[in-house]
Image 1 (cartoon, protein in one colour):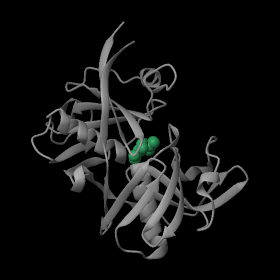
Image 2 (tube, helix red, strand yellow):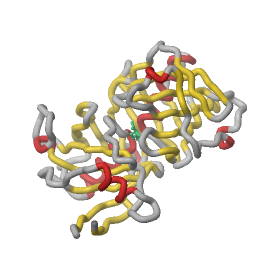
Image 3 (cartoon, helix red, strand yellow):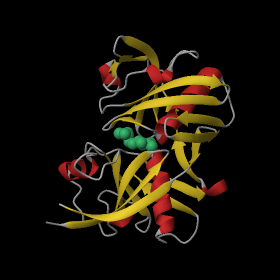
Image 4 (spheres, helix red, strand yellow):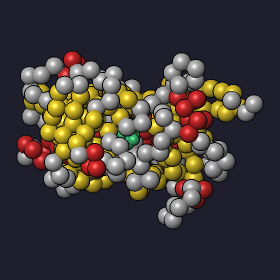
Amino acid sequence: MRRYSFHKGHGTKNDFIILDDSYGMHEMQREFIQVLTDRHSGIGADGVIRVVRAGSVRDWDGDPHLWFMDYYNADGSVAEMCGNGLRVFARHLINEQLVASGSFDVATRAGIKHVEISRFGLISTDIGAATVSDEAVTVDLGDQSWDATKVDVGNPHAVAFIADDADLDALDLHGAPTWQPTSAFPEGVNVEFIRVDAPGRLSMRVFERGVGETMSCGTGVVASVAAYRRRSGFDGPVEVAVPGGELSVTFDGDQARLTGPAVIVGRGEFWI
Ligand SMILES: N[C@@H](CCC[C@H](N)C(=O)O)C(=O)O
């Protein structure tokens, strides 16, 4: 039996198990992550974040002293980026005094992201470029179908806009949406359903790759705002309501910044 200590945190109720592993000693096997994230027999979470020095990560050839956000979905798959996870990761580094100030860089599989403590204790993170594709894709859920916008935020997204007067809560996201053409997302995709409530105000639900429906998805929010800007021409800060709270997104050119809460709720030990 092995003992592990962990922290648990969330960003707009997208929740994560955090494992400290400065020197990269933990083996992050798929089954290990599935056991941890199981909401009935484990701790339960949408994902696991390993806190490791970048120099201990295979294939990282940048600054070895940066902290690396090593992110895994609940099913054990690796994801390139996680917007909510990045804020929670940053909150953990600050709480544990692993960084010297409230403004620092974090290494991720999608590159280096700058993080800052923002107003009212919120955390603001550079997400980088949100690349909107012109490729025609559709998303299907049950007997409904929508044209969707393909957006790359380091990880893949398909954003479907539902009618302005449609009931977002009525969508049944127990089952996974599908997409056409399947070749559009060979590695799978996160699917966002968006309703435009007012200029600069969106509501979103999401079905995450490797997880299922979650209460929030930071990169999904950024992808949705990028798709909204493309379709409406709106050019200002956008507030997005998700089931777990509120997030805001600003753009400087094609560079997105995501701001929202991040909370560490506890810590403990588990045995495997
Ligand atoms: N919840 C995250 C995204 C996590 C990764 C995603 N499921 C994927 O596989 O790309 C966020 O806040 O961005």
